[in-house]
Each structure stands twice: as C-alpha cells, then as structure tokens.
Length: 394
Image 1 (tube, one colour):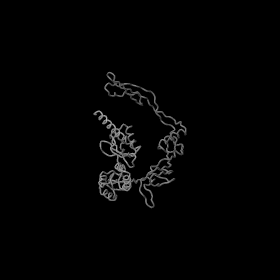
Image 2 (tube, rainbow, N blue to C red; image 1 turned 135 degrees about the horizontal axis):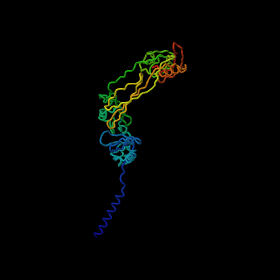
Image 3 (cartoon, rainbow, N blue to C red; image 1 turned 90 degrees about the horizontal axis):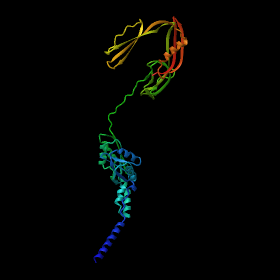
Image 4 (cartoon, helix red, strand yellow; image 1 turned 60 degrees about the vertical axis):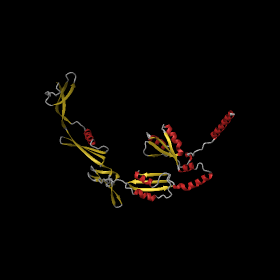
C-alpha cells in the first residue's frame, strides 16, 4: 500500500513540475521599441573621452557631471550599439535604468486588459504634452540658474500643466550673475538660455596714424587695405607726406579706422665717381717670418720689422702636450706705393659706378631705366649714373 502511494505522489509531483516548466514567462516591455525611452549606463571614468567619442558617432549621448564613474544615457533604440562599442573597447559597464514616459505607462499597464490599455493610451495622448521629457540649457553654464530652474519644478519627468516661462525668466534675471534669460517650452522639451554678466568692457583704441612717405617719388600704385587713399597716380610725394588717411568716408562724416596699405612710386638715384688719370696704389713685395715660443701664456714682444712700410700678420698655435707652450708666428709683408695710370675704358668705369649704385637699392625694388655719362675733367674723368626704380614708399 505504501509503495502505491509513493508512486502516485511521484507521478503527481512530476506532472506539476511539467506544468510549471511549460508556463510562458511574462515578457517585459522592450525599451528599445518604445519611443522617447532612454537607457542609462555606468562605466569607469578612466579615458572616458575615447568612449564618448566613439558613441557620439552612432548616437546622441548625454552625460552626468561629477562622480567617480561616468554615467550617460542614450536613446533606448541605440542600446545595442552602445553595448557593442563598450565590448569592443573593453569597457566594463552596467545598465542602471531605463526610463521614459511611455515606457513607464506601458510597464505599469502591462497586465491590464484591452479596455484599460485603450483608456490609458487615450489619457496618455491627452496628458503627454504636459510632461517634461528633456530640459536643455544653452549659453553659459551657471549653477545658480540650474538650481532656480529645478526648484521651480522644471526637470525631466515633471508634470507641468501650468507652465509659466515668463515667471521663470524673471526669477533667473533676479540673479546677480545673469544678464539675459530665455525659457521656452516646445512640446515636451524645455529650452533654457542664460547669459552671464560680463566684466567691464575693454575698449581698444583705434590707431589714427596715417601712412606717410619715407622718400621722394612719383606715385605709380596705391594698394589700400584699410583707410582712404590720399594720393593717386602721378602725384609727387616727399618724406612725411600722407599717403593713406586713417579714416573712411561715410556720407559727410569721416569715421576713424586703422590706416594700412602699400604705396609704390618711381624714384631716381644718382651716383658720381671721379677716376683720376693716375693714382697711387699699394703694391706688396717681399715677406719675412719670425717665430716666438711662450710657456707662460703671455704673448711675446713683436720682433722688429726689416721693412720700412709693411703689413703684419700674427698667428698663434697652442700645444698642451707635456709642458705646454704657444707658438707665435709673425709675418711681415713689404708694402710700397706706386703711381699707376688709369687704363679702364669708359664702359668699365660706368659698370663699376652702376654696380655700387644698384647695391643701394632696397629689396623688392623693380629697376627701370639706367642712364650713365662720362665727363672729362681736370686730371681725370667724372662718371655719373642715374637709376630709375619702382620702390615701396611707406
């Protein structure tokens, strides 16, 4: 009898376990399929910039300031993308919560019947615009302004049937640090734009110095970057003359502004040199060399020259081996003066003067016509070269 009861009991228990295992588990609402739902993640803050950069390429990320861990939320529809990125970058993460107006209602009404679901949907459609799903701040971040907004009840998830943006703007403007405030509500989003008071303005003095000429020239080009041109093509200017005025004309008024630009003109440079028929030149002849040793580091006295007129060259070589010494070498070169006739041609003399004149031209000058003439004078030839060039005048 006992064995029969045990077999029946085992049969009943097995049947009960099979019924329980065949039950379908209750399905939770998938936030990824619910509009306006957001999923919150938490990861370590170390090298968070790398993670946020990768996330920003695939979804919209909003972070929470402060704390040892990095907390951020993304639209629930992008939850799978975030999980994949965290896994590929080897970030430990956990999903803190999933939130959303529709998600909350759907989960709350998950076990309700069709009638309750329909009534809830109709009620949600009518009530949803009165909720706040997002508060976005623009302009300057001011902690006191954020506190005033949150204390007024404007925060994510709040129910605001009587939203008064003007009253909130006045409360923000009452803060000493706020110079401008704007609060608007569009749909379920509230936009707060605040601007902080600025320190005293630092006005920059506008330079009023005109552009002036440095050399005498005939103007060829005027390039004005700022200001008003006071000269034109063909005008002759002299050092100190104003080329560009530090103002612009507006109607009958002259408005100050910096004067800047480039003015070019033709200049004429002249060089004259006298070439005597005979000239005295120095000629070098014999050489004589003497050496002196110095163990004390002091230079020995210069030996006497064997020539009456000479050029002296001194060289020193230091040897630090053993005792150490310095070897001084004195080289005397004999010099005598000789009278030499000028055997240059006129072209050679003009070339010498022209070369010296061109060396005086500033960088960037464009050489124009070059004129040269030779005039016979008392005991020699006068060579005059005149070069025309376009130069920058300022």
